Length: 314
Image 1: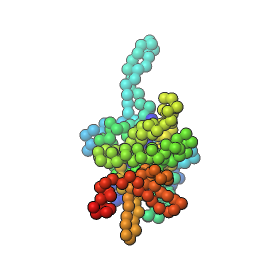
Image 2: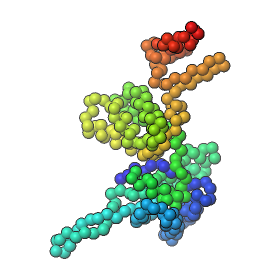
Image 3: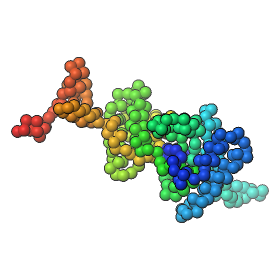
Image 4: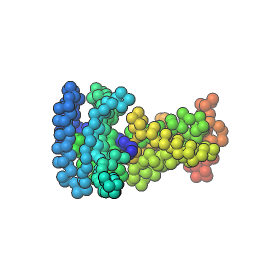
């Protein structure tokens, strides 16, 4: 099944973008959640979907599934679009005949509301609300151009903050490696490659993806791993990044300032300032930049002639 991607974050703030669905959802949540209430909610959603799809050339429609359910004892609401596909069955004479069936192997489009996080968001102070994203959305890459109406119809905001997604990718990739004894020593090299990959995405103005991040991780797996072990660990990493707790989207826009926050050290005093990539920092005297912790000093090694000239004004 397609991964859920937090390309939407919360319901939109202004009334024009919100439409009718968020208010209908809140009414359903606060009420007895009877069958009649649920049907009323689905009708609101269907009316909004029909209105938004009418103006989209590539909106091909499908069957809409609504589900209110518990997962690990946490409540969710799911709105999903499922497509038809051609199938075959045998008739009474054991002859194959063509039929139409629902393609349940994947979701065409879906929006999922984590109701627990929704309540946390509603109760949080304004400055803390960004910590509680509760909407996630899935759509195949081949359908991204037509999926906007699905987001708009449900009153969702335009997308998860690029800074939050980038921050989670930078932190959680390293955290995953540090938790594995056989990978821990590779964490520093992994981080450098993750930062490099994210910067490439930013410069090329393309989305970063979990698939690409797991490919970056693969380069740092032990040589003793066979293909099955590598595939298994990549799958574990992808599921970890895309989990409800971590919430790295399957693809996301990259925020350069957030990369630099993780990748660079910047120190400033009244008389001088220094900035460098963290991977240049080491704890032995041969490092490019040596942090001599015992003597509370930084030592910059291997100065180029240009650097020396700039220092001495020669």
